[in-house]
Image (cartoon, rainbow, N blue to C red; front, side, top):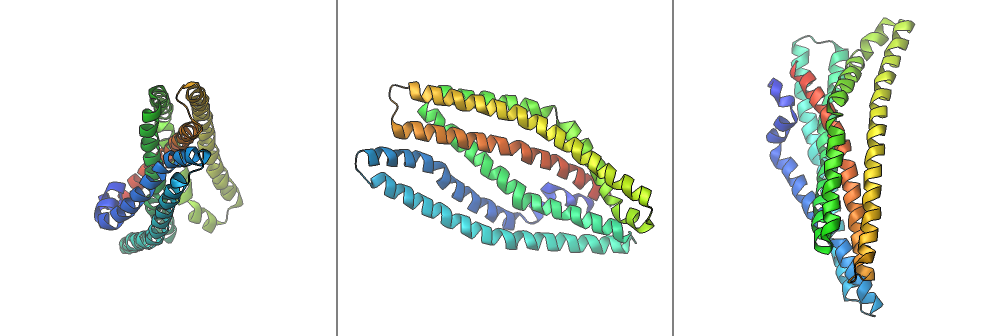
Length: 283
């Protein structure tokens, strides 16, 4: 196994067919989800007029999305378990040949699990969020151009917030992983003071990461709150507004906000995994 095989890109390339199938199922599932608020708005208007056509259409869309979600989850577990087993087994064999300590092997096996989990959970969440954001933005553009412009401005502001955090997130994760790799060695020496310092070090890095995440969370939350209030005001003021259209607009704004809010969290995890990949390449 080559050193660059520990990069996220290399893992995807090596297992591209298994991973691509999960992305395909995920895309189909979320396309149907994106259309649901629009159809539900139609269903509301139909029900107010004593009609059921919109409601039946909504039920069909929901059933398709639900079925795709179940199939994807069954497949995901099996695909990513295979990927982890393959990479972890090869890595352990290589390190044993090099007489690497058991503590280091154990620590790095856990890091490999994080890389695989990134595809199974974080990439899945990021892909879902991206589809929600793009889909909601397209639908909002159809309803009201000013709301879509406000969405673009929100994205720009949030991007600026996390651009300033990039280097700190990487450095904090590097410090945390340095401590984690020392854990077994520290415990084996049975020096209580060293053990206390070790766990204090881990706590300090985790607190720094949490504090930075909290600050970013607060700024993003305010930006998205202002967006929601603006969208509510604009949608109600529209002379062509109906109960169904107002419901659809607010739902899409909430979907957009949820998707945008999740993407920075995945961004932080990606930075952490870049540090892990660099660490594993040094094997």
